[in-house]
Amino acid sequence: MTFKAFGFAAILAACASSTGLAQDLKADRKFTDTQIGFDTASGYSNYTLTIAGPNGIHASASSKSVAPAIDLKRLDTVDDGIYHYQLTASTEEKIPLRSGLDNGREHNPPVMLKGASLSGNFEVKGGTIVKFDPAAREVSKRQK
Image (cartoon, rainbow, N blue to C red; front, side, top):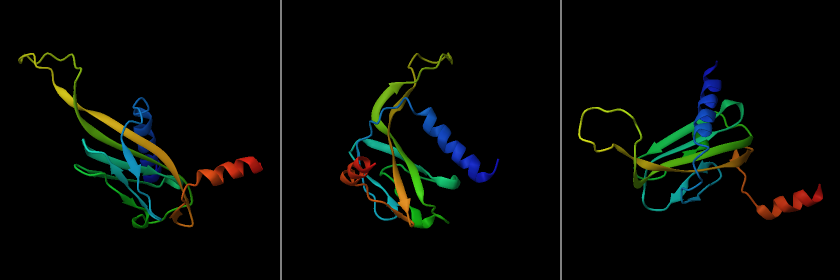
């Protein structure tokens, strides 16, 4: 398997493994012509932003305290097409880690931070992100 195919397969596996997560991360899209970014509500940490696109294009960025951004200009080649993004983060809420391991210590169950995610799509044409216009989409649907 080539590196690009392996990377795209890893992105798809990560997305498939989190399909049970609700779209519960509170964030507003901050897209420019070439950059994917988000403004998030407070109470999140440990962010990971991943994008996957045509011909095996993929990129990811992580940050402990703020939502990261990815600039498509920094990728070697940006092909036109539909891209998928996923932003994940940890909330401040602690949930018990369910493991049946009895390690002989006091019975204080281990905890982890609850996760939250947000995902969606965007389109690239001519090397720039196409601004989504819901009104234009409705017009094109009626013309068909």
